[in-house]
Length: 106
Image (tube, rainbow, N blue to C red; front, top):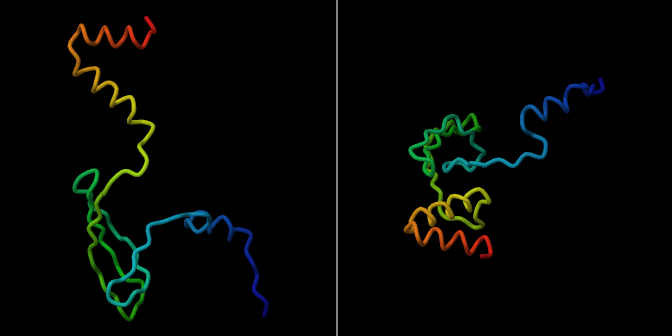
């Protein structure tokens, strides 16, 4: 009996995130098998607890990983405006006007 490839299999693969998808991969600390993140509990926007379960039936280990933001490698293009606004807000009114004059080329 030959295997029949369903027309929907590429769509199913895309829906399940198996096509060109980079995902955070967790390994079971007991047996080293892949684990699934069952739940994420965000403590802060830079700190989370990931509740995981081993995919190896014989192991069945469930565990929690703590994940935190460490540092920036390349700054976001979205934060530049926030930084400029913060710096301008720290200036006195006359310093702010001087900065605007410099930016306008006057």
